[in-house]
Amino acid sequence: MTSASLIVPSVLPADFARLGTEVEDLCSAGVDRIQWDVMDGVFVPNLTFGPDVIASASEHSSVGFEAHLMVVNPDDLLHRYIEAGCELIIVHAEVCTHLHRTLARIRDLGARSGVALNPHTPATAVQHVLSETDLVLAMTVNPGFGGQSYIPAVEPKVAELRRMIDDSGYRIELEVDGGITHETIAGAATAGADVFISGSWLYSWPDGKAAAVRELRGRADVSRERVRSDGAHRMSPGLLIESPHPVTVSA
Image (cartoon, rainbow, N blue to C red; front, side, top):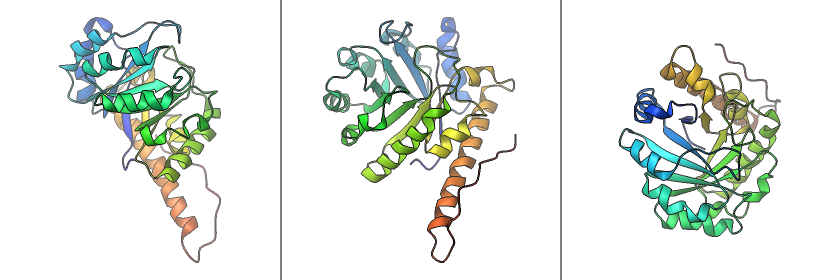
């Protein structure tokens, strides 16, 4: 688990006519990375960014890019998005016939590898590929469109993934994507996520993007610290085991 919560905006809600400026604004807001939602109109019912668009925006960024490939043939596109400047490539377990090989190929091409799971896909789908994985992404909405509502029923799967990753001994980030707001991030963080994608909510926060990033990071850090403190308390010799109490964060 990363020591600090990472806030990664999706550029899906951005003004596509001024992507360079949008990327600069996000970097100035203090984000940790920027996510590009790559959709092919087949795996999901939407079309978005090609590698040339991302390459054009990369010169405006001071943080790393990750490409979330929501496409049916990711293997054919890996090198294009890495060459475009994406340091992390995320593929979907649902479409990779040879997932272990695909993840290994991403690393061979010089990028970090990630694997995404749709809400209905069980955590066990990644159990045997963790050795080739740098990030696991649990979708908390059905992929394809921004502005959807968070699915809290995914949180037990996030917790299962957290245990699986911790037991593996590998350094793997656990990311959540979909409906992440100041109200939902605590549940995802408590379940074990340490990287948080936010799109529509972050862009619409009335106090601006920098304030939105601080709000999300603060709430996630408080929730994760509460989990760590509770875990240490329950494991301390001579102390009674107590049930975790609800996380509350003042606005």
